[in-house]
Length: 503
Ligand code: SF4
Ligand code: SF4
Image (tube, rainbow, N blue to C red):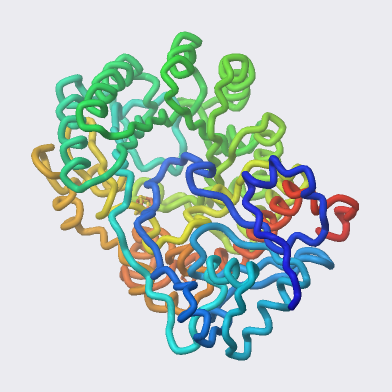
C-alpha cells in the first residue's frame, strides 16, 4: 500500500519544523475567524454545512467517486489545487501522489483505511457513488447590525447611496436599537452580535459610538453573547483621542481607500471638492499604525478606478493591512454616473493587476476573502445576511434590510423581534440553489450568485445569477491560485521555485 503524508492545517505547519518536506500531501485551508475582513456590506451567512460523510467500516466498503464540479488547477510542477463545492473551508493543495490517489476515484472504488482517503473525504473531494452531498442550512452564529449613526459626511463620493444631511441618531434611539438587537439575537439563538457603526461618516458622531459601545458591552454580558464591533470610516479626520479609544476598547476600524493619489481623490473628494488621499495616508501612517491599529482597507472598484486598484493594494500591503476589493453597485443617486459602471474587461484587467501585487508579496495570513467582492472561501448559500442575520437601523430608528435601502425601511419602529420584519421585506436573498444558472457552477457555494440587489436591478429577478457572473468566473480561479500559492508558501513548499514558474 502506498503511504501518503499527513494533512496539514496552517496552525500545525507553523509550528512544524519539518514542513519543508516536499512530500506533504495536502495543505488545508483556514478557518473563518482568522480571515474576516470588514467591508461596508453585510456579512455573509455562515449557517451552512453538508451531511458529514461516514468513515466507519460500513462506509469504507461503499464505492466512492470524485465529487462532481470540483475545481482543479495546477499550481506548480508538483502541486495541484482542488476545491470541492462542498469543502467546509478553503481549497486544498495536493502533491502528485495525493492527486493521483484522488484521480483514481474517477472510477468508483471503496476507501482504503489510510489517512489520505480520510482526508480526501473530509475535504468533500469524494462522495458515495450512489449518493450526493446534502447541503444543510443551519442557524447562523452572528447577528450583524448596521447602525447608521449619522447622515452627515465630509466627503462627496459619486457612488454613495446616502442622501446626506446633518441628521444623526440620538442616544435614546441608539440604546433602544441595541436593546432590540440583543433581544433578537437571544431569541434566535445567535452566539454573537456584531455592530457596524456607519453613516455617512460615523466618526463625526464619535460620542454616540462610545456611548453605544459601553451599553453594548453591558448587554452582551447580560445576554451571554459575544460582541464584535467595527467603525466604518473614510479615514480623513480621525482624531488621535478617538484612535486611542479604539485601541483601548478593541473596536475594529475599516477605512475606505479607492486608489493612490489622484485615483482616490477623483472618487472620494471632499464635499465641495479637493483631494483627500494624503489625509487618509496621514491618518493611517501617523495616527493608526503608531498605535498598533491596523484598519481593514476596503476598495470600491468602479470603471473609473479599476486601473488604480493595483496601486491601492500595493499601498495597503506595504503597511501589512488586510484588503477587501468590492464592486460598485449602482444606486438611485448614482444612476446617472455611467462612468462608474462596471465594464467587464476594465474590471478584470484591473483586478488581475491587483492580484499580481498580492502574488509579489504573498502575505502569510489568509487573504482570499477580500479578493473578490462578496465571494467568500467558506461554504455558504446566501451572498449576505439580508433576511437571515442582518439588520440595518437608520438614524431615525427605522428598520431596513440593507444599507442601500435606508429610505425603504421595513418598519418605522424598532420593537420586539426584528428578524421576522426583515425576512418579510422586499429584498429576496435566495439561496444559490434557487438561482437559475448557478446550480451546476463549481463556485456556487463561494459566490452564492452575487448581491441580490444588484441582480434585481440589472434583471428584475431575484432568482438568477449575478450580472457580474462572467467577472466572478474569470477572477475566482485567479484568486484561488493565490490562496494555493499562499498555502504552499506558509508550508515552505515554494522554496526553490522561482516566481516565474509559479506565476
Ligand atoms: S453568479 Fe456565476 S459564478 Fe456566481 S454562483 Fe452563479 S454561476 Fe457561479
Ligand atoms: S443586498 Fe447586496 S448590498 Fe445589500 S447587504 Fe446584501 S450584498 Fe450587500
